[in-house]
Amino acid sequence: MDEGTSSPATAGQDIAGLSFEQALGQLEQIVQQLERGDVPLDQSIGLYERGEALRAACQTRLDAAQARIERIVTAADGRAGATKPFDAEG
Image (cartoon, rainbow, N blue to C red; front, side, top):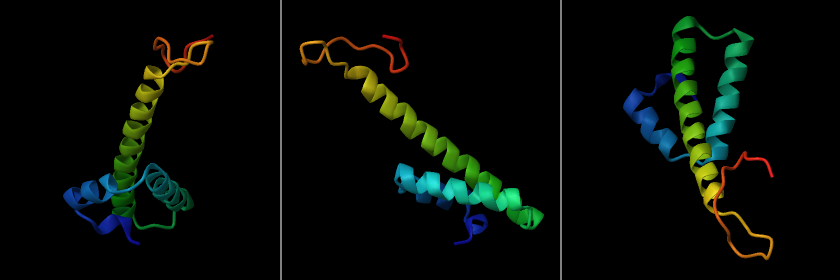
């Protein structure tokens, strides 16, 4: 798969259709390619742009998951209780 050749519009549609795990996997592959440093400059720029789009998509999905968790807080008796932030202590 050549991540550097799709247009921004096509890339956005492509990324929207990926699961979180697929997007994260592609992002990891891009990071590995860029870290190796054996990719031509123009392709590196395209990879970086796709990587940023993948990162943003993953962050959006993580934010949505966190919002869902914040809405579901179980009380001591097992019933759903009040909401509180995901990362709150206690």
